Length: 623
Image (cartoon, rainbow, N blue to C red):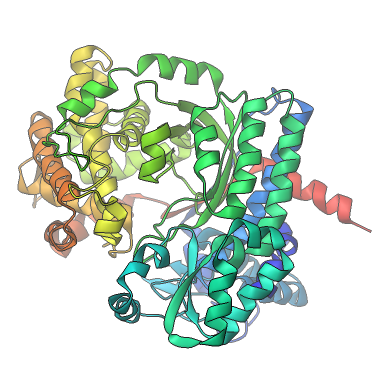
């Protein structure tokens, strides 16, 4: 990670220019080599819908508002950390872009690129043809991003692990960076331990290992450096901000305050158990926040390394209370799933699931890093051991789920793909409930293989595809039971099914690295093969056989659960390969129809609270 310390040290300063409005010059300019021309960047931005989330914060106290500002500070740091984890030149390229923009007088050409950087979370964007494009002068993306030695191949790591098989859990640990064991890297990490003695205490044995390796460097060998050492400087800043926020809330929201203190410590020891326990079991007042490195979707080498993100949420008390009362019967849902448990602990019973799920409806105040975008809901923690002990929390993002502009995009796509008889089947309520039960679906089903391995360990990059596929299928599998219980009426039942269909209509052929799109393509093909969808080649439209949903979904779910239980990566890969197939005459035709009626391809989410904070921060720092 060359120059990592210099780049990361600049995070808190550089981040403050993000999203501050700057008037751009209308005069066209020629940009240096490597910078995307204005015409090309404008083509992407013309297809980008910008929405601004501005929830009502009038119910927050002064201390809660102060805590929000501290969490925004953390989010801005995580934003830059996430970009650097995705590409080693991201932060330096952004610094150069900002400098160029200032030098040229903020013309539209560079302002476009600043917007594009924010949209893409770095210097490489997926273009209108769904292919990756560099728009700043940087190297191509590599599968291991910047959380493995830059450019390392899987074959190199596997050769090392063949020699030292016991090192696999350590090297592929979730919150670490894989380094080559060269003297420069080792000495840089030893210097961090010298600079921050607290990290030396919290990571016993690390110094001894590094000192041993310093005496026998080997650039064919690898080691795992904890996040807290790899990103020591910004995480120490985060530690201070989280404790400041905790102090503000200590008297009026002690549970949330306690969570913030524990999470601050977690980030320095790279063990989230204490914070996760407090997060899942705490009863928070008005605020909530996802803080840390959780999701592994950006790791295209092994699918095991987590990337940083943060969101600040304000609770919708009325909707949250109503939702908690409405959800019951979780164990009966688990017991009904189409798989036969063979417990890794010797039992033959299906796992026990928590009945009182910590679920809440929230409005997004601000979102950063890996979690930023149009995500409609979150369920965490992911670590199976923590989930078994404490459960998981579900955060429904209401102001994304019910945003009218985003819903209209979904309606247009749906109506472009389906027969006219289905045009009115899609509703916003259908999307809300489908999303809710997708997250609940992550609670259910096997969380370990028959031989006791975690799914990520057993299935590697395929684990995320199957897990998201499982959750989608459970959502639709449970519709019949929820209708029978009276939780759904006929209209909502049809709307949930319709949204399940709409979800799998794709506008571009996905790459395997696109987790959600890959599992959506798999569903589409399975549904078509089993007669749930029928395609009329003359009209180019799909018919949905709603009465086939339960049978088709149940069988696909049975196969997915078996793959998770068995933990055979080759079988999982073969299943994905079988159904993740794109046919231009079918998928391409539907994609073209949706593109023809759709105005937007991308969504850029901005946050009024963040923009207000940046304006105030700039005013405070003005001479």
